[in-house]
Image 1: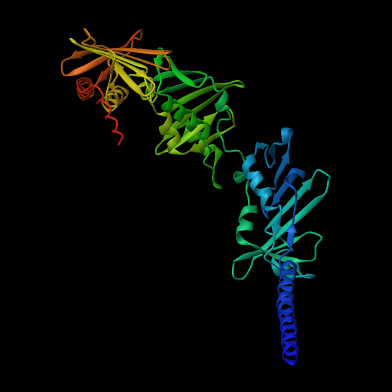
Image 2: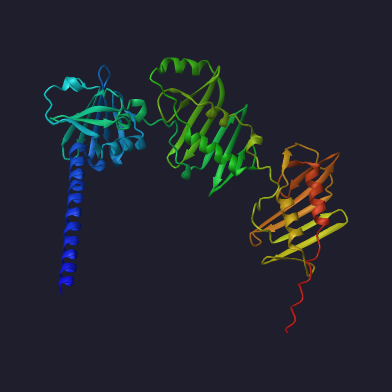
Length: 445
């Protein structure tokens, strides 16, 4: 009995010790969390959807004022009305919702000049739709330059914010203005006209397919036209604090014309002119007032010839599997029909690997140039049917000296082909063979 009493007492003592240990270690953690909340409070917490106006003021500079206009779109209204970069303004607002401090320096500051807040380096005034307004003041950097002193007008506290927070708030007109030179809708674009290298090329779009309309109807290289559209859509002003509008205009007027692009969507037509002066490129757009310096990549993307946009591939079936292939090469003829994943020729199942090589060689036939003449009597006739019979492409190939010239049926354009492409095609056709017989079934034991 005495032993059992001692055991029970030991268990009770252990429980009390554990409770005391947990209590002593738990309280400081809660205390630390509360302390952290007290030393690093939020300075400001606005809801971006409620903000209707922002003004950024700096000593010696005109105030930068933004206002939310129709369709909740931001616009710069001072110092000069301009379109705003919606993403840049959203990024600014996200820094303010919320703006956290690193710590509180002083709870009841009486001398703001100690922190550079009596005459702040940046003052951001925020107006909300309920007419409520708040003014954020940013002063000197801390002695270690790791942060910046900040205060909210009407709040006696002085805070320190991180350097990256200041960078996110220290914005100029150039940072927040819409730098796009063209504002067309890529999805609703129907026409593109490019004048470069003394030639005008016009492209038309039918659904997602581009075609060359002028100087004459031609097949277009889809990726080349899409790259052109993308370059025009992404063309932006290269702005700096020392930009001089008069100098840019003078450089543009004295420059050499590189290209002029006209783009038409449902809203109308916009035009961009690009000129080169020495090593710099300048652009003038109908969508925005002024002349601006642009990246050299804008100029190089427009400085293209007609052939740069022509489809050099002889066949359009691309990576789809053809349904039928008919090849006549002199006295030799080949007929192939696909059924599921199997290829057949005159009732004989063909080796899939060999047919695959032939299909790849047909797909790879590409023009090296576009001659105006040289097509004579064809020696090779190749017809490829694809897209469940909806697309039939017939190509005639003639030998002209040591080169080959091809022509697609019902099209005037000529395609010059490398001799190796034809040699590979002929070899792949000769190498066609029946599929090996299936392996015999294993005998049952």
